Length: 211
Image 1 (cartoon, rainbow, N blue to C red):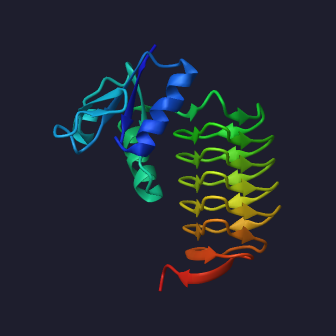
Image 2: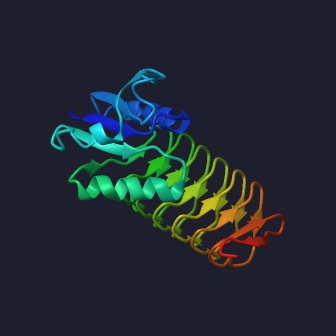
């Protein structure tokens, strides 16, 4: 069994470690964070180095995971680790439900109580947070975060680096563009373009991020 080395000793990282422990896949879980050596422990796990020292690990003895909430930074760090030859793990909590026909990319986490249904496709570095629902045939691009309790109906598409806020809902067959933020408890009933913030019931664009 390998060690799981997690980059990012935050609350999110602690939840990743907790989910990983439920799987029984890894013999040990350790953290790396640039707050080291001032910060040496998070939860039950040790912080043993910074991001630079992580690159000194033997790729044959460890899997890696990037536990950083910011979508763009998380995806960038993951791609750098892959280019350096490391195997990026995916973590599915034992209390999550993931269809055998769903496809999960590298560095995905599916948290406790979440559901990923038949035919869903999740890109790299996707977060499906606690109690979220990703219904059949949804397509989530790289670096997407589906927040706790959010619900995506069948056939929804979410573009790269987008964030669906806590409790938000997206009706079937709608498309959310790239680099979009959907506000908490929003109800998305129309397609949402790239690079915007959309909030409300029904969700409306309130800001263009490229302005």
